[in-house]
Every structure is written in structure tokens, then in C-alpha cells.
Length: 494
RNA sequence: UCCUCGAUAGCUCAAUGGGUAGAGCAACCGGCUGUUAACCGGUAGGUUACAGGUUCGAGUCCUGUUCGAGGAGCCA
Image (cartoon, rainbow, N blue to C red):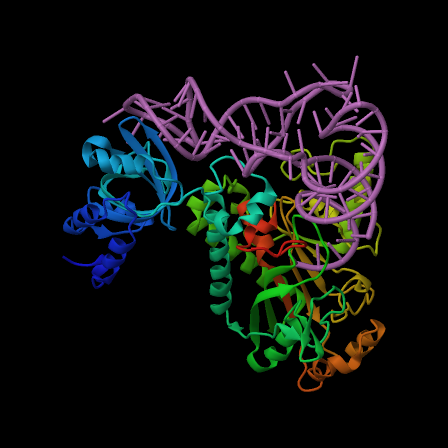
């Protein structure tokens, strides 16, 4: 008799000792071991049709119908319907299956059958159960198969992530993160980590979390960019990838206080070259998800046709043009005109045209992004923002110094800004002047200024927000579901 | 920080003008060999967020507090 997956016999002792009395532990274990069934994952079931295999997982849903019980098992890789017939397993095992509470852990052995009636992920395959062993009965699992409120679910986030939708979203997130690294690693970038504990505000714009650092003040990083700029002079193309922190009291579906951001930085690169890199990069992420997470996107009900459009080139709109477009949109809406999106559908999400009010020099708000992005079938670059509303380090256009070589990438369907990028100032005197103009302490930026003294080159970089990207790809309402344990204003538990 | 809305059974929500606290789901008991959030019958389940006020009488009206949701600003 071999152990589980060829392991020594110790795990079996565990089952025997801890098996609850409701389970005929010794009988089921004997049955499963003597069956010599192979342990497999649900995702692998299509390769095992007609074979007797063992699945190990948790009860996702159960429905009983007289002399048969459907146990929907999830094992982390998928969801499989396990069919328990009274006539096959006997009265005692059947009674156990019939009363097994949701989220109980259990092990089943049976024959894999292809059956179009079987729900699940991937679906179309089910297990004809021959033996069943309960590892632990879960009593009073709080999350049911009905709808729940946001606060309740967030309080139970540690359990909510087991639900199919959350499982699908977080698997897409993992693909996004893997695609990010894969593309950068294969395009000459090297990952160089940047500090999370930092001595001062990097950009001087947003509110930071302050922590005590042995009596001094330190701040949780809101960006690794400045350190990236040091790193390119050692490695040419670099990226940092990790959590970043904003203490802004934002309460919207697009904001977290802790979120993940990838920030590539490139030496010998101007803004035009940067945009080409960005559109290749984002397209690769989206197309990888379409290829590798078809089941997950289907489970989420995502309209993937909108994602299939995401291939280079992305439209490029100047800030000047965008302002003119928005002013025209508002005027037409106020005149009662019907304004349509790129596909001819009516513009959505704009209840009050006055929210679109904007004039040259103002930054975009959420309503502006929502309106603008609906005019395009794929992400759109907005280029050349006024220097006054952007960070101090952005390179001005030589012929129009009031605007800078900056570009935001706005995701379609109202998901907002997913990338902010720019060409950086490479001239030391100009950088020092900008730091002075912004009222920032030059002493704190001494090392950063010094980078322009020793072999300065034109360089550019950008930051992409992971949760917003995942929310867009998954088509979900709120970024909080794009993070396993999201941190928001008033949300630090669990 | 500001604006709007909300808090009733474990969960999601009802409750006429101020007059006995209701349903579905979950739980528990029973029935059913193809369910997809199954269905059918039954049982049990309540300090109506908290504090105060008006009233013969408050889930309902008033004041304050706490917590939550959406949005604005700010940002990815």
C-alpha cells in the first residue's frame, strides 16, 4: 500500500487520528488506497476521462435529490461536480455526503466522466464517486450561495476569496503579474528593487503614511521612480515591482491605500519611444490573460471582444485636443444632442454634463476620463499635460515649455488611468530650478540631482497600477476585488 | 474635507398616515435518480446600530453619535 502521492505513511495516521466520527475513516481510506487511484487536480480532469482518480478539496456547493447527491468540489485549480449515488456508495457514505456542510474538506475517489450537464471549471466533466472521506466538517460557514453586502463580504475577505468570482479575479491578477515580469524580462529589463521605507516625499504631491524610524520620520514609498532613475545608469533598463502606499482619503471604486505598481525606467529613451514600449507591454498583458484565463473571464462574464481590440497602436491624443473634445462633448450634451461612443452606442455614465466642465490648465477628473475613453475602442494616450499640474521632474517641450513630455494611458470602459509616464528632465540646472519652484527641499534631492552630473542621458519611464489593470481586464466594478486583502480608507481587517 | 444615501433574524431585504416584527435564503426535520443560486412540506430564529427626546403608543418623527456605501477632490 503506497501513501499519498508516494509519501510515507505518516499523513494517513493524521487522517485516522483526526477524522471526525461521522466519517467511516478506516473504510474509506482503505477503499481509496487499495483502488490505487492517482491524485489529480480538477484542472487536469479532461486528461483522465474513463480513469479512476482521487480529488482533494473543499465543498463549494451541494444539492441533493433523493438517492443522489451532487457535491461541487473546488480544489483551487477548478470546480468539479462529484456525483454520489446511494446505490454505489452505500447508505452510510451517502448519508455523510447528503449532510456535508459547505466548505468541508474532503477527498473523493471515482471515475471521471465527460458529461455536458456537469457545471464547474472547466466544466463538462464530473466524478462518479466510489469512495468519500471527510477530512473536516465545516460548521456554519458564513458565506452562502446567495447575495451578500459589501461590508459583510469585506469582513469575511479571508473566506470570500474562496468564492468562484474572487478566485477567478485573483487568478487573472496572478497572470497579469506574471505577464508583466515575462515581458520586461524578455525585453532587456532587469528587476531592481527600490526601498519601501523612504526619507521624504518622492514627488511632494500626495499624502504619505508616516512611520517612526528610530526617532526619525520615515514614509512608506509612493513610488520607486527616483531610485529607478539611479538604477538605469547602472543597468540601462530596469523596473521595480511591489506595493506602494498613498494616505489619500479617497473613497472611490478606483482607489486603494496600498496597491501594486510596476515601474519600468529606460535610459536613452524619449517620450515617443516610451509610448511604443507601453502599448506593446499593455497589449502583451491583456493578450496573455485572454489566452491563459479564458475560463476565468468566462466565469466573470467578461465581454472579451473589447479586450481582443487591445493591440498596438493605441490612439494618441494631445492634452490640447482632449480639452477641446471634452468642451465640445459638454456643449453637445447640454444642447440635448445625442452623443455616441466609438461603437455608436450612447455615452454612458455622464448624468450631469456640467461634471465635464474643464478649461486648459485643469487636470482631468474621473468624469472626463470616463467620457473621453468611450470615444475609443482601446486604451488611449493623452500626451503633453501642462507642466503646472504634473510632477516636477517631467521634461518640458523645447518649443512649448508650458507643457511637458508626459503621457497618461486611460483604460476603456471608464476604468481610468492605468499608466502615468513621462520623459524625465536630464539637465541638472533645469531640474534644480524645478525643485526650487515646487518648494521642495533641495537637500533631500541631492543624490537625485547628482545623477544629472555624471553622464546624464535622456530617459523615460512609467508606472502601471496592477489593481486597476486587473479590474479593467476582469470587468469588475471595484478595485478592492482585484486585491487579495485590499487596504482602503477604514479597512485594515482582515 | 465636502455632497448624497443607508443601518430591521446568520445573510439579502419588506413593514400603508406613528398602532401586535414579516418574507426569501442559510440552519434543523422530512420527501424526491440529473441538480446548475434545485424544488416541495415543516420547525426554530428579533434589545429594529447606539444615546437621548416627542407621544397614550416609535422600526417609523426629532437631535446627537458610531459605522457603512457611492461620488467629488487627489491619484495609479
